[in-house]
Amino acid sequence: MSTPRLQLAHITKRYPAVVANSDVSLTVRSGEIHAVLGENGAGKSTLMKIIYGSVKPDEGSVMFNGAPVHIRNPQEARALGISMVFQHFSLFDTLTVAENVWLGLSKSLTLGEVAHSITAKAAEYGLDIDPTRPVHTLSVGEMQRVEIIRALLTNPKLLILDEPTSVLTPQAVEKLFVVLKKLASEGCSILYISHKLHEIRELCSACTVLRGGKVTGVCNPQQESNASLSRLMIGAEPPALEHHSARAGDTVLSVQSLSLGRESAFGVDLDGISLEVRAGEVVGIAGVSGNGQQELLYALSGEDRRAGAAMIRIQGQAAGHFGPGRRRALGVHFVPEERLGRGAVPTLGLAHNLLLTRGNAVGRGGWIRVGALERQAADIIRRFNVKAGGPNAAARSLSGGNLQKFIVGREIDAKPKLLIVSQPTWGVDVGAAAQIRGEILALRDAGCAVLVVSEELDELFEISDRLHVIAKGRLSPSIPRAAATVTQIGEWMSGLWSAAPAGEVAHA
Image (cartoon, rainbow, N blue to C red; front, side, top):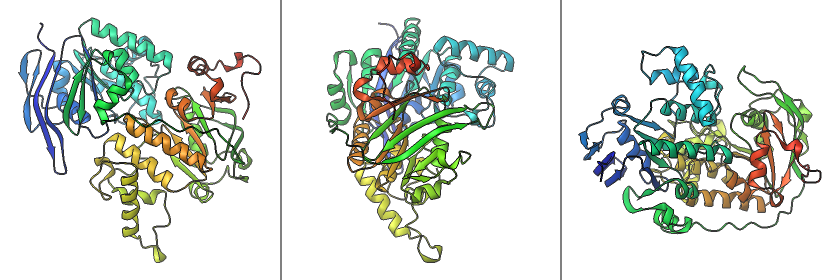
Protein backbone atom coordinates (compact mmCIF):
# COMPACT_ATOMS: atom_id res chain seq x y z
CA MET A 1 0.00 0.00 0.00
CA SER A 2 1.07 3.60 -0.52
CA THR A 3 2.80 5.56 2.22
CA PRO A 4 0.25 7.04 4.64
CA ARG A 5 -0.22 10.79 4.49
CA LEU A 6 -0.17 11.11 8.29
CA GLN A 7 0.81 8.77 11.10
CA LEU A 8 0.51 9.58 14.79
CA ALA A 9 2.09 7.10 17.16
CA HIS A 10 1.47 7.02 20.93
CA ILE A 11 0.65 10.72 21.26
CA THR A 12 0.19 11.88 24.86
CA LYS A 13 -0.55 15.41 26.04
CA ARG A 14 -0.98 16.28 29.71
CA TYR A 15 -2.33 19.44 31.31
CA PRO A 16 -2.31 20.17 35.06
CA ALA A 17 -5.95 19.13 35.53
CA VAL A 18 -6.41 16.56 32.75
CA VAL A 19 -4.70 14.18 30.32
CA ALA A 20 -6.11 15.45 27.02
CA ASN A 21 -4.58 12.70 24.87
CA SER A 22 -3.34 9.35 26.14
CA ASP A 23 -1.33 7.00 23.87
CA VAL A 24 -3.25 8.03 20.75
CA SER A 25 -2.31 6.48 17.40
CA LEU A 26 -3.94 7.49 14.12
CA THR A 27 -3.26 6.78 10.45
CA VAL A 28 -4.67 8.82 7.55
CA ARG A 29 -4.02 7.66 4.00
CA SER A 30 -3.62 9.76 0.88
CA GLY A 31 -6.99 10.81 -0.50
CA GLU A 32 -8.87 9.53 2.54
CA ILE A 33 -11.64 11.43 4.32
CA HIS A 34 -11.09 10.34 7.91
CA ALA A 35 -13.51 11.24 10.70
CA VAL A 36 -12.41 11.91 14.27
CA LEU A 37 -15.40 11.31 16.49
CA GLY A 38 -15.81 11.90 20.20
CA GLU A 39 -17.90 13.64 22.80
CA ASN A 40 -17.02 17.13 24.04
CA GLY A 41 -13.76 17.02 25.98
CA ALA A 42 -12.66 13.72 24.39
CA GLY A 43 -9.39 15.29 23.19
CA LYS A 44 -10.20 15.84 19.50
CA SER A 45 -9.23 19.53 19.39
CA THR A 46 -5.98 18.96 21.28
CA LEU A 47 -5.01 16.19 18.87
CA MET A 48 -5.74 18.39 15.86
CA LYS A 49 -3.71 21.25 17.36
CA ILE A 50 -0.77 18.86 17.77
CA ILE A 51 -0.98 17.96 14.07
CA TYR A 52 -1.19 21.66 13.19
CA GLY A 53 1.78 22.62 15.37
CA SER A 54 -0.05 24.89 17.81
CA VAL A 55 0.34 22.39 20.69
CA LYS A 56 3.44 20.33 21.46
CA PRO A 57 2.91 16.69 22.55
CA ASP A 58 4.57 15.38 25.69
CA GLU A 59 5.14 11.96 24.15
CA GLY A 60 4.80 10.26 20.79
CA SER A 61 5.81 10.85 17.19
CA VAL A 62 4.35 12.33 14.01
CA MET A 63 5.15 11.20 10.47
CA PHE A 64 4.00 13.08 7.37
CA ASN A 65 4.34 11.48 3.93
CA GLY A 66 6.50 8.78 5.50
CA ALA A 67 9.05 11.13 7.09
CA PRO A 68 9.27 11.99 10.81
CA VAL A 69 8.41 15.63 11.49
CA HIS A 70 8.49 17.94 14.49
CA ILE A 71 5.93 20.62 13.70
CA ARG A 72 6.76 23.55 15.96
CA ASN A 73 4.13 26.04 14.79
CA PRO A 74 1.27 26.48 12.29
CA GLN A 75 3.59 28.18 9.80
CA GLU A 76 5.65 25.00 9.57
CA ALA A 77 2.45 22.97 9.26
CA ARG A 78 1.26 25.11 6.35
CA ALA A 79 4.67 24.77 4.70
CA LEU A 80 4.23 20.99 4.83
CA GLY A 81 0.77 21.31 3.29
CA ILE A 82 -1.40 21.05 6.42
CA SER A 83 -4.31 23.50 6.82
CA MET A 84 -6.87 23.66 9.60
CA VAL A 85 -10.19 25.34 10.28
CA PHE A 86 -10.50 25.77 14.05
CA GLN A 87 -13.72 25.57 16.04
CA HIS A 88 -12.77 28.89 17.66
CA PHE A 89 -11.68 31.22 14.92
CA SER A 90 -8.31 32.98 14.65
CA LEU A 91 -9.25 36.21 12.91
CA PHE A 92 -8.32 39.83 13.62
CA ASP A 93 -11.53 41.81 14.14
CA THR A 94 -10.17 45.12 12.86
CA LEU A 95 -8.80 43.72 9.57
CA THR A 96 -10.81 42.92 6.46
CA VAL A 97 -11.51 39.40 5.24
CA ALA A 98 -8.85 39.73 2.54
CA GLU A 99 -6.24 41.08 4.99
CA ASN A 100 -6.87 38.18 7.39
CA VAL A 101 -6.49 35.62 4.61
CA TRP A 102 -3.39 37.39 3.25
CA LEU A 103 -1.60 36.90 6.57
CA GLY A 104 -1.46 33.14 6.01
CA LEU A 105 -0.45 33.22 2.34
CA SER A 106 2.73 33.96 0.41
CA LYS A 107 3.73 37.61 0.56
CA SER A 108 4.52 37.43 -3.15
CA LEU A 109 0.77 37.90 -3.65
CA THR A 110 -0.76 41.36 -3.61
CA LEU A 111 -3.81 42.13 -1.49
CA GLY A 112 -5.81 42.60 -4.69
CA GLU A 113 -4.82 39.15 -5.95
CA VAL A 114 -5.82 37.61 -2.61
CA ALA A 115 -9.22 39.38 -2.73
CA HIS A 116 -9.79 38.06 -6.26
CA SER A 117 -8.84 34.53 -5.16
CA ILE A 118 -11.25 34.73 -2.21
CA THR A 119 -14.13 35.76 -4.48
CA ALA A 120 -13.39 32.94 -6.92
CA LYS A 121 -13.00 30.28 -4.24
CA ALA A 122 -16.12 31.49 -2.42
CA ALA A 123 -18.15 31.20 -5.61
CA GLU A 124 -16.76 27.73 -6.32
CA TYR A 125 -17.72 26.44 -2.86
CA GLY A 126 -20.99 28.33 -2.42
CA LEU A 127 -19.54 30.22 0.56
CA ASP A 128 -20.05 33.76 -0.66
CA ILE A 129 -18.25 36.45 1.32
CA ASP A 130 -17.18 40.03 0.58
CA PRO A 131 -13.35 40.22 0.87
CA THR A 132 -13.51 43.95 1.74
CA ARG A 133 -15.66 43.51 4.85
CA PRO A 134 -14.04 44.05 8.27
CA VAL A 135 -14.24 40.86 10.33
CA HIS A 136 -16.00 42.62 13.24
CA THR A 137 -19.05 43.10 10.99
CA LEU A 138 -19.39 39.35 10.30
CA SER A 139 -21.64 36.88 12.07
CA VAL A 140 -20.06 33.77 13.58
CA GLY A 141 -21.25 31.74 10.61
CA GLU A 142 -19.67 34.16 8.15
CA MET A 143 -16.40 34.00 10.09
CA GLN A 144 -16.45 30.24 9.66
CA ARG A 145 -16.80 30.71 5.91
CA VAL A 146 -13.67 32.90 5.94
CA GLU A 147 -11.72 30.21 7.81
CA ILE A 148 -12.79 27.52 5.35
CA ILE A 149 -11.87 29.65 2.32
CA ARG A 150 -8.52 30.60 3.88
CA ALA A 151 -7.66 26.92 4.37
CA LEU A 152 -8.68 25.95 0.84
CA LEU A 153 -6.58 28.73 -0.73
CA THR A 154 -3.41 27.05 0.56
CA ASN A 155 -4.08 23.99 -1.68
CA PRO A 156 -3.49 21.64 1.27
CA LYS A 157 -2.27 18.05 1.20
CA LEU A 158 -4.02 17.50 4.55
CA LEU A 159 -7.10 19.56 5.41
CA ILE A 160 -8.48 19.53 8.96
CA LEU A 161 -12.12 20.63 9.20
CA ASP A 162 -13.88 21.15 12.55
CA GLU A 163 -17.71 21.32 12.23
CA PRO A 164 -17.56 22.83 8.71
CA THR A 165 -21.24 22.46 7.78
CA SER A 166 -22.91 24.19 10.70
CA VAL A 167 -23.51 27.38 8.69
CA LEU A 168 -24.75 25.83 5.45
CA THR A 169 -28.13 25.04 3.94
CA PRO A 170 -28.78 21.38 3.04
CA GLN A 171 -28.19 22.26 -0.60
CA ALA A 172 -24.86 23.95 0.21
CA VAL A 173 -23.81 20.96 2.33
CA GLU A 174 -24.37 18.70 -0.66
CA LYS A 175 -22.23 21.02 -2.80
CA LEU A 176 -19.45 21.11 -0.19
CA PHE A 177 -19.46 17.31 0.00
CA VAL A 178 -19.03 17.13 -3.78
CA VAL A 179 -16.02 19.45 -3.50
CA LEU A 180 -14.49 17.52 -0.57
CA LYS A 181 -14.88 14.22 -2.42
CA LYS A 182 -13.23 15.83 -5.47
CA LEU A 183 -10.34 17.06 -3.30
CA ALA A 184 -9.94 13.55 -1.89
CA SER A 185 -9.98 12.04 -5.40
CA GLU A 186 -7.11 14.37 -6.28
CA GLY A 187 -5.06 13.05 -3.34
CA CYS A 188 -5.87 15.55 -0.59
CA SER A 189 -6.41 13.87 2.77
CA ILE A 190 -9.13 15.28 5.01
CA LEU A 191 -9.54 14.98 8.77
CA TYR A 192 -13.21 15.67 9.43
CA ILE A 193 -14.62 16.49 12.86
CA SER A 194 -18.39 16.61 13.13
CA HIS A 195 -21.09 15.64 15.60
CA LYS A 196 -23.51 15.01 12.72
CA LEU A 197 -23.33 11.25 12.47
CA HIS A 198 -25.22 11.08 9.18
CA GLU A 199 -22.58 13.37 7.60
CA ILE A 200 -19.76 11.14 8.78
CA ARG A 201 -21.50 8.05 7.45
CA GLU A 202 -22.09 9.67 4.06
CA LEU A 203 -18.71 11.35 3.60
CA CYS A 204 -16.02 9.42 5.44
CA SER A 205 -14.45 6.04 4.70
CA ALA A 206 -12.59 5.73 8.01
CA CYS A 207 -13.23 6.88 11.56
CA THR A 208 -11.20 7.03 14.75
CA VAL A 209 -13.23 7.31 17.94
CA LEU A 210 -11.89 9.05 21.06
CA ARG A 211 -13.31 8.82 24.55
CA GLY A 212 -11.61 10.40 27.55
CA GLY A 213 -8.50 11.14 25.50
CA LYS A 214 -8.01 7.52 24.38
CA VAL A 215 -8.76 5.70 21.14
CA THR A 216 -11.75 3.42 21.77
CA GLY A 217 -12.37 2.26 18.23
CA VAL A 218 -11.51 2.48 14.54
CA CYS A 219 -14.20 1.70 11.98
CA ASN A 220 -15.61 2.34 8.53
CA PRO A 221 -18.57 4.62 9.33
CA GLN A 222 -20.31 3.62 6.09
CA GLN A 223 -20.78 0.19 7.66
CA GLU A 224 -22.17 1.62 10.92
CA SER A 225 -25.49 3.08 12.01
CA ASN A 226 -26.04 6.29 13.93
CA ALA A 227 -26.83 4.17 16.97
CA SER A 228 -23.63 2.10 16.76
CA LEU A 229 -21.50 5.24 16.26
CA SER A 230 -23.17 6.81 19.31
CA ARG A 231 -22.35 3.73 21.37
CA LEU A 232 -18.71 3.90 20.27
CA MET A 233 -18.54 7.59 21.13
CA ILE A 234 -20.46 7.94 24.40
CA GLY A 235 -21.04 4.33 25.43
CA ALA A 236 -24.80 4.56 24.83
CA GLU A 237 -27.42 5.82 22.44
CA PRO A 238 -28.70 9.35 23.15
CA PRO A 239 -32.13 9.33 24.81
CA ALA A 240 -35.11 9.82 22.54
CA LEU A 241 -36.78 13.20 22.93
CA GLU A 242 -40.24 13.29 24.42
CA HIS A 243 -42.12 15.72 22.19
CA HIS A 244 -45.59 16.34 23.58
CA SER A 245 -48.24 18.19 21.64
CA ALA A 246 -47.94 21.93 22.18
CA ARG A 247 -50.62 23.65 24.23
CA ALA A 248 -49.69 27.24 23.57
CA GLY A 249 -50.92 29.86 26.02
CA ASP A 250 -50.78 33.63 26.08
CA THR A 251 -48.46 35.59 23.79
CA VAL A 252 -45.17 36.32 25.59
CA LEU A 253 -43.23 37.91 22.70
CA SER A 254 -44.88 39.92 19.95
CA VAL A 255 -42.90 41.59 17.17
CA GLN A 256 -44.90 43.77 14.79
CA SER A 257 -43.56 45.29 11.57
CA LEU A 258 -40.01 45.60 12.88
CA SER A 259 -37.90 47.47 10.36
CA LEU A 260 -34.39 48.64 11.21
CA GLY A 261 -31.68 50.00 8.94
CA ARG A 262 -28.31 48.34 9.14
CA GLU A 263 -25.87 49.90 11.61
CA SER A 264 -22.85 49.16 9.45
CA ALA A 265 -22.28 49.19 5.71
CA PHE A 266 -21.99 45.41 5.82
CA GLY A 267 -25.04 44.65 7.96
CA VAL A 268 -28.53 43.61 6.90
CA ASP A 269 -31.66 45.77 6.94
CA LEU A 270 -34.57 44.24 8.85
CA ASP A 271 -37.68 44.59 6.70
CA GLY A 272 -41.15 44.40 8.28
CA ILE A 273 -40.51 41.45 10.59
CA SER A 274 -43.55 40.16 12.50
CA LEU A 275 -43.72 37.11 14.75
CA GLU A 276 -45.28 35.85 17.95
CA VAL A 277 -44.08 33.35 20.53
CA ARG A 278 -46.60 32.04 23.02
CA ALA A 279 -46.15 30.40 26.38
CA GLY A 280 -45.62 26.67 26.01
CA GLU A 281 -44.29 26.61 22.45
CA VAL A 282 -40.97 26.56 20.63
CA VAL A 283 -40.74 28.75 17.54
CA GLY A 284 -37.75 28.11 15.29
CA ILE A 285 -36.09 30.49 12.84
CA ALA A 286 -34.01 28.89 10.08
CA GLY A 287 -31.68 30.65 7.68
CA VAL A 288 -28.18 30.88 6.30
CA SER A 289 -25.85 32.93 8.49
CA GLY A 290 -25.68 36.62 7.62
CA ASN A 291 -29.31 37.08 6.57
CA GLY A 292 -30.37 39.27 9.48
CA GLN A 293 -30.23 36.83 12.39
CA GLN A 294 -27.66 38.92 14.25
CA GLU A 295 -29.60 42.16 13.76
CA LEU A 296 -32.86 40.52 14.88
CA LEU A 297 -31.27 39.01 17.97
CA TYR A 298 -29.69 42.33 18.95
CA ALA A 299 -33.13 43.98 18.69
CA LEU A 300 -34.79 41.24 20.76
CA SER A 301 -32.10 41.15 23.46
CA GLY A 302 -32.09 44.94 23.97
CA GLU A 303 -28.57 45.49 22.68
CA ASP A 304 -30.13 47.47 19.82
CA ARG A 305 -32.83 49.80 21.18
CA ARG A 306 -33.69 51.69 18.02
CA ALA A 307 -36.99 49.89 17.49
CA GLY A 308 -40.22 51.71 18.23
CA ALA A 309 -41.48 50.89 21.70
CA ALA A 310 -44.57 49.06 20.41
CA MET A 311 -42.69 47.08 17.75
CA ILE A 312 -41.52 44.64 20.44
CA ARG A 313 -43.88 43.62 23.23
CA ILE A 314 -42.87 41.33 26.07
CA GLN A 315 -45.73 40.01 28.21
CA GLY A 316 -47.88 42.82 26.84
CA GLN A 317 -45.44 45.62 27.68
CA ALA A 318 -44.07 47.83 24.93
CA ALA A 319 -40.38 46.97 25.28
CA GLY A 320 -38.72 48.19 22.08
CA HIS A 321 -36.72 50.82 23.99
CA PHE A 322 -35.87 48.56 26.97
CA GLY A 323 -32.26 47.56 27.55
CA PRO A 324 -31.18 44.00 28.44
CA GLY A 325 -31.59 44.57 32.19
CA ARG A 326 -35.24 45.69 31.98
CA ARG A 327 -36.05 42.85 29.60
CA ARG A 328 -34.44 40.38 31.98
CA ALA A 329 -36.68 41.73 34.75
CA LEU A 330 -39.62 40.71 32.55
CA GLY A 331 -38.26 37.15 32.45
CA VAL A 332 -36.27 37.27 29.20
CA HIS A 333 -33.06 35.25 29.05
CA PHE A 334 -30.75 35.03 26.06
CA VAL A 335 -28.10 32.63 24.72
CA PRO A 336 -25.95 34.37 22.06
CA GLU A 337 -24.23 32.51 19.24
CA GLU A 338 -20.80 33.79 20.26
CA ARG A 339 -19.77 31.77 23.29
CA LEU A 340 -16.53 33.54 24.17
CA GLY A 341 -16.79 37.31 24.41
CA ARG A 342 -20.58 37.69 24.52
CA GLY A 343 -21.87 34.55 26.21
CA ALA A 344 -19.00 34.40 28.67
CA VAL A 345 -16.01 36.47 29.78
CA PRO A 346 -13.05 34.26 28.80
CA THR A 347 -10.79 35.05 31.76
CA LEU A 348 -13.45 34.84 34.49
CA GLY A 349 -14.39 31.64 36.27
CA LEU A 350 -17.72 29.97 35.58
CA ALA A 351 -19.14 31.11 38.92
CA HIS A 352 -18.38 34.76 38.24
CA ASN A 353 -19.76 34.40 34.71
CA LEU A 354 -23.14 33.85 36.34
CA LEU A 355 -23.09 37.55 37.21
CA LEU A 356 -23.72 38.34 33.54
CA THR A 357 -27.35 37.28 33.93
CA ARG A 358 -27.88 36.99 37.69
CA GLY A 359 -28.58 39.82 40.10
CA ASN A 360 -29.49 37.69 43.10
CA ALA A 361 -25.84 36.97 43.96
CA VAL A 362 -25.13 40.62 44.77
CA GLY A 363 -25.97 41.41 48.40
CA ARG A 364 -26.51 44.60 50.32
CA GLY A 365 -23.84 47.22 49.75
CA GLY A 366 -22.91 45.64 46.42
CA TRP A 367 -20.93 42.75 47.90
CA ILE A 368 -20.81 39.64 45.71
CA ARG A 369 -21.91 36.47 47.46
CA VAL A 370 -19.16 34.28 46.03
CA GLY A 371 -20.28 31.16 47.89
CA ALA A 372 -23.78 31.37 46.43
CA LEU A 373 -22.34 31.82 42.93
CA GLU A 374 -20.06 28.81 43.33
CA ARG A 375 -22.95 26.63 44.50
CA GLN A 376 -25.12 27.71 41.57
CA ALA A 377 -22.29 27.07 39.11
CA ALA A 378 -21.58 23.65 40.63
CA ASP A 379 -25.26 22.72 40.29
CA ILE A 380 -25.25 23.70 36.59
CA ILE A 381 -22.01 21.77 36.01
CA ARG A 382 -23.58 18.64 37.53
CA ARG A 383 -26.99 18.99 35.86
CA PHE A 384 -25.59 19.57 32.37
CA ASN A 385 -22.57 17.26 32.71
CA VAL A 386 -20.08 20.07 32.00
CA LYS A 387 -16.48 18.88 31.96
CA ALA A 388 -14.64 21.64 33.81
CA GLY A 389 -12.12 22.00 36.60
CA GLY A 390 -14.82 23.17 39.04
CA PRO A 391 -16.97 26.30 39.39
CA ASN A 392 -13.94 28.60 39.34
CA ALA A 393 -12.45 27.22 36.10
CA ALA A 394 -11.91 30.02 33.57
CA ALA A 395 -14.46 30.02 30.77
CA ARG A 396 -11.70 29.88 28.13
CA SER A 397 -10.32 26.65 29.66
CA LEU A 398 -13.41 24.69 28.60
CA SER A 399 -13.87 23.03 25.24
CA GLY A 400 -16.36 24.81 22.99
CA GLY A 401 -19.05 22.21 23.56
CA ASN A 402 -18.67 22.21 27.33
CA LEU A 403 -18.80 26.01 27.48
CA GLN A 404 -21.96 25.88 25.35
CA LYS A 405 -23.53 23.43 27.80
CA PHE A 406 -22.71 25.73 30.70
CA ILE A 407 -24.11 28.87 29.04
CA VAL A 408 -27.33 27.15 27.97
CA GLY A 409 -27.61 25.63 31.43
CA ARG A 410 -27.05 29.00 33.08
CA GLU A 411 -29.99 30.53 31.23
CA ILE A 412 -32.33 27.55 31.60
CA ASP A 413 -31.51 27.39 35.32
CA ALA A 414 -32.76 30.98 35.66
CA LYS A 415 -36.32 29.71 34.93
CA PRO A 416 -37.10 32.27 32.20
CA LYS A 417 -40.53 33.29 30.94
CA LEU A 418 -39.03 33.80 27.48
CA LEU A 419 -35.84 32.09 26.34
CA ILE A 420 -34.18 33.28 23.14
CA VAL A 421 -31.46 30.88 21.99
CA SER A 422 -29.07 31.22 19.07
CA GLN A 423 -27.37 28.02 17.88
CA PRO A 424 -28.19 26.00 21.03
CA THR A 425 -26.13 22.92 20.14
CA TRP A 426 -23.39 24.36 17.92
CA GLY A 427 -20.30 22.19 18.39
CA VAL A 428 -21.68 19.86 21.06
CA ASP A 429 -21.69 16.06 20.83
CA VAL A 430 -24.79 13.97 20.19
CA GLY A 431 -25.35 13.15 23.85
CA ALA A 432 -25.05 16.77 24.96
CA ALA A 433 -27.19 17.95 22.04
CA ALA A 434 -29.93 15.53 23.03
CA GLN A 435 -29.75 16.77 26.62
CA ILE A 436 -29.92 20.46 25.65
CA ARG A 437 -32.84 19.84 23.29
CA GLY A 438 -34.58 17.82 25.98
CA GLU A 439 -34.13 20.64 28.50
CA ILE A 440 -35.54 23.14 25.99
CA LEU A 441 -38.62 20.96 25.48
CA ALA A 442 -39.01 20.51 29.24
CA LEU A 443 -38.85 24.28 29.65
CA ARG A 444 -41.52 24.65 26.97
CA ASP A 445 -43.71 22.03 28.67
CA ALA A 446 -43.38 24.02 31.90
CA GLY A 447 -44.92 27.03 30.13
CA CYS A 448 -41.88 28.96 28.91
CA ALA A 449 -41.97 30.63 25.50
CA VAL A 450 -38.88 29.64 23.49
CA LEU A 451 -37.47 31.23 20.33
CA VAL A 452 -34.65 29.23 18.70
CA VAL A 453 -32.49 30.65 15.91
CA SER A 454 -30.45 27.90 14.30
CA GLU A 455 -28.76 26.92 11.06
CA GLU A 456 -29.16 23.26 12.04
CA LEU A 457 -32.34 22.17 10.26
CA ASP A 458 -32.47 18.74 11.89
CA GLU A 459 -32.46 20.48 15.27
CA LEU A 460 -35.27 22.86 14.33
CA PHE A 461 -37.40 20.02 13.01
CA GLU A 462 -36.77 18.08 16.20
CA ILE A 463 -37.77 20.72 18.76
CA SER A 464 -39.89 23.39 17.04
CA ASP A 465 -43.66 23.61 17.04
CA ARG A 466 -43.64 26.24 14.28
CA LEU A 467 -40.95 27.38 11.88
CA HIS A 468 -40.01 30.65 10.19
CA VAL A 469 -37.19 31.31 7.72
CA ILE A 470 -35.18 34.53 7.62
CA ALA A 471 -33.60 35.62 4.33
CA LYS A 472 -32.15 39.01 3.40
CA GLY A 473 -33.69 40.63 6.46
CA ARG A 474 -37.22 39.38 5.76
CA LEU A 475 -39.10 36.77 7.78
CA SER A 476 -41.32 34.16 6.17
CA PRO A 477 -44.77 33.32 7.50
CA SER A 478 -44.73 30.53 10.06
CA ILE A 479 -45.44 26.94 9.11
CA PRO A 480 -46.29 24.09 11.50
CA ARG A 481 -43.36 21.72 11.85
CA ALA A 482 -45.52 18.78 10.79
CA ALA A 483 -46.32 20.51 7.48
CA ALA A 484 -42.74 21.53 6.64
CA THR A 485 -40.07 19.61 4.73
CA VAL A 486 -36.30 20.04 4.68
CA THR A 487 -36.38 20.67 0.93
CA GLN A 488 -39.03 23.37 1.31
CA ILE A 489 -37.23 25.14 4.15
CA GLY A 490 -33.98 24.95 2.17
CA GLU A 491 -35.71 26.70 -0.74
CA TRP A 492 -37.20 29.31 1.57
CA MET A 493 -33.66 30.13 2.72
CA SER A 494 -33.26 31.77 -0.69
CA GLY A 495 -36.32 33.95 0.00
CA LEU A 496 -38.71 31.91 -2.16
CA TRP A 497 -41.58 31.52 0.29
CA SER A 498 -43.77 33.94 -1.68
CA ALA A 499 -44.21 31.12 -4.21
CA ALA A 500 -45.73 28.79 -1.58
CA PRO A 501 -49.24 27.51 -2.45
CA ALA A 502 -52.13 29.25 -0.72
CA GLY A 503 -53.05 27.62 2.58
CA GLU A 504 -49.67 25.95 2.98
CA VAL A 505 -48.40 28.41 5.59
CA ALA A 506 -49.99 29.70 8.73
CA HIS A 507 -49.18 33.10 10.14
CA ALA A 508 -48.05 33.30 13.75
